[in-house]
Length: 512
Ligand SMILES: Nc1ncnc2c1ncn2[C@@H]1O[C@H](COP(=O)(O)OP(=O)(O)OP(=O)(O)O)[C@@H](O)[C@H]1O
Ligand SMILES: [Mg+2]
Image (cartoon, rainbow, N blue to C red; front, top):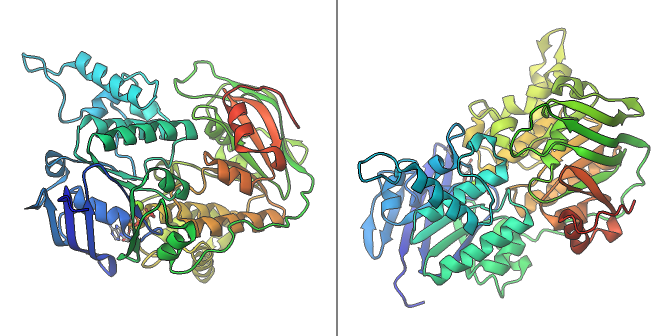
């Protein structure tokens, strides 16, 4: 490319205490390209784009925009220079509406100077429509699901009319249909000459939309490739420095007795909460040693079902039958759920999974303290050993177990949430998007771990928006549509097509 790049970053370096997050990185962004940024969890991707977007202001190296050196005092400065960013961890205000969030700090004004609420709502609705999101701009962001919040965040970035758009894992919480819409939007921006930086751990996406891919490894530049011609192996080699062998073990054990049995289960709330899809006729079983997948579009009620099974769902009249080991199970709170051997790894790690200001070690042991306590005394040695074991087995990248969880990269935070739940030694493990934001090497680790856990007799129920993940990991896939079970597909017939058809409500037949 001979054209002058929109952005040129040269010799970028950043150190956090003892961690060198970025070292001597060069990166250019050209008008009309989709430039993918790849690397394992903790490789330095978010740090690099936080520097470009003005979030981090102290760093080594230089940044030029249109050939002119810039130094941003903060995110607003970067936005003024035409750089819009969708951050990995959503930063929306729960107590404000969708429209207010989108235009926060730059609300359209009437001629008399007051906020033009109508115009703000209309514009917000337009941006949402572009993304195929049918959301009322007046709704409070706090009432939205993670995936919907992500769409709001994307809409906000679009509304900035930026020349450079940075997206840090924008599809992590989106279901396939929304991803497709987003890709159409990206294609449109690209044609309009916007330069796009795209971070994702979903390899298949890159082949579809990226023009160039820059790979980081341990904070350094590992190489730049053309994702349309480079093989997946080549890219993974650059990312992890070795090849990752087959992600999916074969030869699983035969499942045992039915552990969880859910029949005609429904929750009828006294007053429905907008945006929530309560269980409305769920039938499913999970045997000991079995991994069952939950598929469905955004809003199908997968998260709500998992929450309810963990006693953390909405209130309301419950009908139908839920048993564990053949005994009635009325999950009225997480404590009761844990007592019956049920653990839950939620999707929203920041909200529900982690205490960010606490150390990694504290986060990991918290739920298992009772088993590590003798007569009220915490056995420190045991705690230290247990934490170390968990962190190693999941390959968590942290300077030490004593650092605050907030300082870990996004994917590593996810692994900590996982480690924490496993320590409770559950018999039934409920997982909501367990590999969201996790890199490909760690994903393989988590898949292996889930297989190992299932082989010890654990029952696993897992919701995922990644169809390949469901297909390769699960013994059976249960498809939900509007809170109901619409299909139960054994592994062999759980094709992408069959899952999608059922998820769209095309075919409401049961194939047990
Ligand atoms: N505020 C901080 N304080 C201390 N260390 C930090 C901070 N932010 C990032 N780090 C460290 O810098 C390294 C790079 O983190 P970064 O978030 O850039 O990774 P990433 O490539 O975005 O990973 P992921 O795919 O998991 O999101 C990690 O080792 C992380 O722990
Ligand atoms: Mg990151």
